[in-house]
Image (cartoon, rainbow, N blue to C red):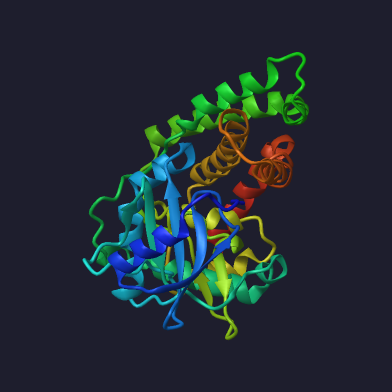
Length: 348
């Protein structure tokens, strides 16, 4: 979760007026996400938008290289393919999807009145059916989109270097007066074997997929979890945060839900639009291991090597405790469940 940056809002408002022709009445910081700083933008004519501000750091560096492609995809899906549940970037008066301002990247997005899908809502049959249908429509649209700038299958695990450096830094000191360092060390040391074994296994999986598998690529959101899904008063769901949109196997968007009890509802609704009767178990498992280890890297690297506020440090510790550490002792068990449930895709 982000904390508000020290930016000059007056200058940003002037920049938006100049580039977009939008007269900004108010910017309200929204403390969500990990990559960009987010604001609710209210214009003087009462229109509302969503503003994202990106600054260059370790987390955003790779994302910014691919931002032109992901913004283009979201815009095409909504404006050309008429998939209105895709939140899309607003063009500048010169037809651009983003602008640069004072070493920052500025993106203005369409706004939908709604709430983030709750944990309870995400477990319902209705939500799974709606999500399966939406993902299938997005994947099905691939061949009609302009894919210029899209990458081929990304099996990159270059975070490995930063992970190993972070683990070394976090565990090599015997005594320290830094309470945050000591807390981090106490959290990581019992998990070192699990982390390193998981990293070795991920490397083996990566080579196996490179050597033996040819996977069909479609447009994927890459993170369609409930935190990136809004639901409005009519019950329509909308996918937000398209920063990671890329070409990937369809498993990239569905692996998150394979261990849900009502997975079958998602499969049926998906197949009604896009009939596909095979799934690559190895790629599913690759995605799971990569997600856990990459999230681990992002948090501990920032805590150790970047200057962050006390609030950000607290938020990062909460992220580690809730979203990473519970998985590490249970990676193999979760993998077995993922493989077993992936086979349901073929049977239904």
